[in-house]
Length: 203
Image (cartoon, rainbow, N blue to C red; front, side, top):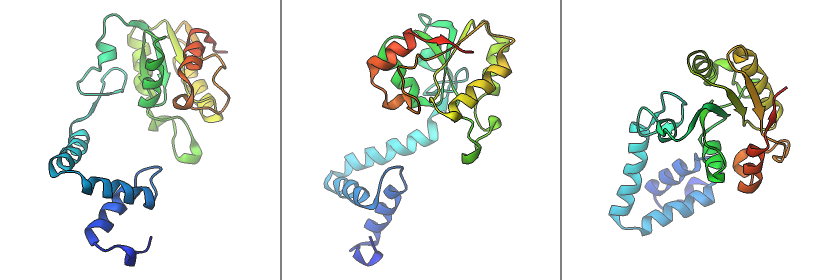
């Protein structure tokens, strides 16, 4: 959409900002902006303040790196969880996907990415060192690799295994009910749940 098509510079600026979000083109951005314009001022203010508050105050769990409101996330703080089983995931969306299955009662480690040289992500760009520290300090009996079933995901699995294998007795991966190349967030809950329950030994 050309600048001359905007009747207002304020409208143009708002559309441009929404267009920066992943998966949002200019037409969708325009619909979102017009929707906000139809809302009352309090609703729009609450929307804006929630985003600002999120950016300013959100923190990451000191144990697993999951997004949290507190120093320790609700999952790590839950004494009913099995603390010696750690599921390694790429991001928060994977935690949510696995939690929605209701089939997993261990804890997590959120890497914040996977090793992908093409995208500029190396081992030092994701939370591998903190997982190694957990392995050294805690009584972890099993690590479950729940990373994408891609070359990058497999590379990350092997790298982590090499770094922590002397501290951990058991490694497993999700059963291949999750199709090769799939991300967990696109996998239905039943398939993902079965993949956790039927996980197989790594290597």
